[in-house]
Length: 318
Ligand code: A2P
Image 1: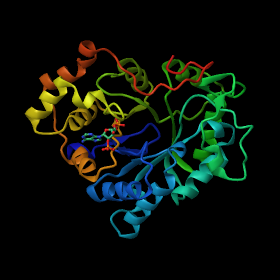
Image 2: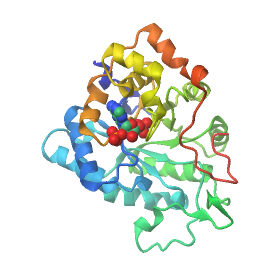
Image 3: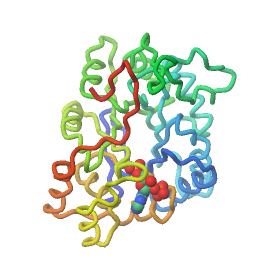
């Protein structure tokens, strides 16, 4: 088995390809369709999207094109989407709408996108897309409009039914802290463990403690923004550039290889086919010394989290 095609078995027995294609911020329709289609042609078998990315339709068309051309069978693909905050009270409706947009009968993995419900009272329900918005708090313009009367535990209990109904083969969470997971575990109706926790992980945010906690509970971490997201300073970091030059690969591939070696799922995003190809085919096993250098980057340059929306009064990541 080559370095880019390793499979991890989840705690419910389902299998997830370790390297997947991230699609956040891929908006342009044609480019998104093509990036998903080309990624599958290149060999990716895992595609990650979310309702709020606003690209499920394009992701679905890219997948359908690859299936129709016989490049892949549906059952050999692993597709993830995520429940947006405005629909945490309406998860069954939300997953059905996602499936319709994706043109799929089921998703392999359905995640609670953030452990916070958002208010949807002012949303006109006549068009499902109206839910795909970020309502801001009228009393605090920088914060999202949090629905304090609904908890992520309520949402997760509903997700357990979606798995039983077969709409999602597996269920999990995203952006959950250790404390959020502990709170979930102690509810008496909590029966089905999340298979994954998708969080920001990269060399400047290695998340050692969270990864160790999840491992202890048989939950696989998934790294989003593994390259540090858009305009990432990681990609120009001098230490990483020198390792990349030595190995004759991009810094992006150093970060992806480091993640693969650390043993969790990694979801690099690119809208450019050449990069999508290199991010899959140019992975390299890092020497012990290079691996240690990347792992120590945070000590040298300081910890940096790039994705940190304001959900006041809910404190995410705590
Ligand atoms: P683009 O989509 O134009 O390729 P992350 O996965 O951490 O969210 O990072 C994604 C960012 O990294 C995007 O801005 C993406 O830009 C860029 N990117 C992805 N792969 C590479 C690569 N091999 N070399 C340089 N930049 C890359």
